[in-house]
Length: 279
Image 1 (tube, one colour):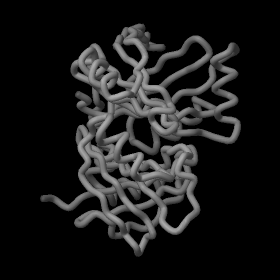
Image 2 (cartoon, rainbow, N blue to C red):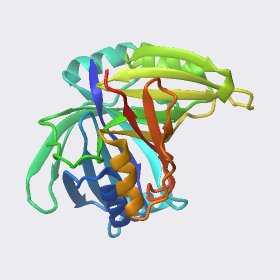
Image 3 (tube, rainbow, N blue to C red):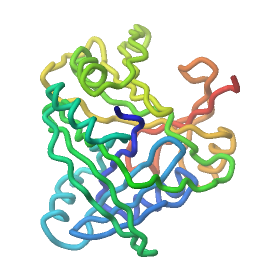
Image 4 (cartoon, rainbow, N blue to C red):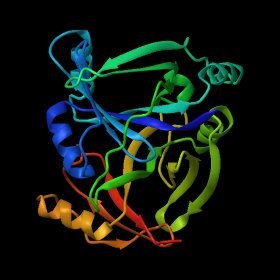
């Protein structure tokens, strides 16, 4: 079945600006750059997943679509899961009623080096995943992860999804997609119900705000990111010295954790950095 979150996608109105923001934010360079058919991409590879930035490039239908999508700013749009047997996963997800598309093969050529990558993937229709664009992918080879200085982002700790319908989320991510359902907790002090799904060393944190009016049929949406670092003080100092607006370091909600907030330079994605006490 699914082994990891291979990558997730942030669609941006200005790709070059987004690359500059994330090179600084993550403390690492893109591992892959590609361009073509009206869209450009840059992929930042970390220890347990990757962030793919996508933006319009030139003219054409794809470029027009990307510009329309980002008219009001950047958007987290897609989750792309990694499979170690895409044929078997396609069969299982068909049996579970997710109506996956046919498996297709894609390739990408690095903009600067001319190197090639390829993968097989299928898509699950948006209506089966409560509006979150979802793909399952089996790559030919993983991207190399750059060695970085202390204080850079090392992994993705968790990705936050907002849902108006927590029971639907349990069925979608746990029963149908097959992710490990690790926690269901209501925190009255934060007026939130938390659902944790774990895979490949990270957590999909699905949250449901209590006390608000919800349309249970409305879509989920990807909301925010928490990056893990090996040196939280160095990360905070690095970003503050570069002119970003960062909070003080504070105790995190997870036992033994500390966090700080990054308030700008994130393409308007709510962003935390976190470090965990040694176990």
